[in-house]
Amino acid sequence: MNTVTLIKGDGIGPEITEATIKVIEAAGARIKWEEVSAGESALKKFNTPLPAEVIESLRRTGVGLKGPLTTPVGSGYRSINVALRKELDLYANLRPAKTYRGLTTPFENVDLVVIRENTEDLYTGIEHMVGDDAAESIKIITRKASERICRYAFRYAQNADRKKVTVVHKANIMKLTDGLFLESARKVSEEYPEVEFEDCIVDNMAMQLVMKPWQYEVMVMPNLYGDILSELCAGLVGGLGIVPGANIGEQAALFEPVHGSVPKYAGQNRANPAAMIMASVLMLGYIGENEAAWRIEQALSDLIEEGREITPDLGGSAGTREMAQALATRVR
Ligand code: NAD
Image (cartoon, rainbow, N blue to C red):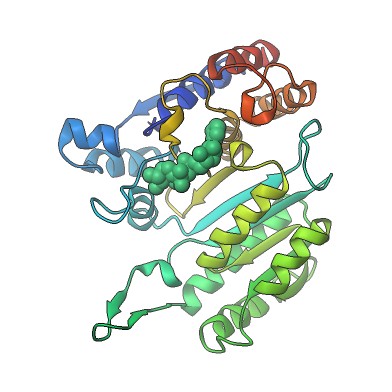
């Protein structure tokens, strides 16, 4: 039996987590949950949003499932999500975006994966004022992190039977930073001659994705472009309510929905649990529970296609609990 660290999260987090556990149990996956609190609930209970036991548990189990965590805007504590990624060196952020039959989206048959470098670029938070009227933010790109993420992307493509990796950059303008990322991608691509390799400048990529998304399979890019383009890809396939994310490192992996804690729906039984359920599908694949993962993904796809027992954001009228119950019944 696998032990998995469970962080229910803030806002709608506890409801979508309950829904997800119900579906996982129905699928017969044998998991022992080690529940820990982070975010607002931990702040109330332990006076810190990130108690040491969260990191300890993730280090011990090596795998976690996490609901969304609220980050105060402007002041207050810094993002726990970013802290977890840093602390555990979860360097690869994997964000698949796939169309479901039954959802109205601009395109059919989109099946893309964005692989975002998760540890550097403009997200190191090194910013300062220069006098009163100017500010600087430092963009860091290292050869080590760039080669590591590109190697992850090619390995992922190989394992997932994908034919092509596209590296996204702005090396025409940022010749040193993005230039180094591109150079690293080119070097790593030579280790994988069976995978097609191409590069695309980020602005062109944005246009191509909203015109001909089927041209792409696996895209790898620095942190900021990955943040923005993965959300664009979410929009292509039906929005934040259905896309999962995985943060993967050498020692641990943390699976979560891409969306936030949607405080306005908290406790109302109207949050869509699909993104969290799809995050659990990625997690089940990671720990080798492939049969359960496959059954859940199929059941969710069928439920969405039928269009009745799904939440209002997907066009249905079911509550979170009802959607979870319908899925659990099918999965069984
Ligand atoms: P959000 O994703 O919480 O909500 C944006 C909008 O998307 C919502 O108003 C809602 O209409 C829709 N939506 C998203 N998920 C949905 C779901 N499951 N069911 C139904 N509708 C859904 O983004 P936000 O409002 O910018 O952020 C709210 C809080 O979440 C902030 O504190 C932010 O920092 C945090 N956040 C956390 C994570 C994370 O934990 N990984 C990610 C993003 C935002």
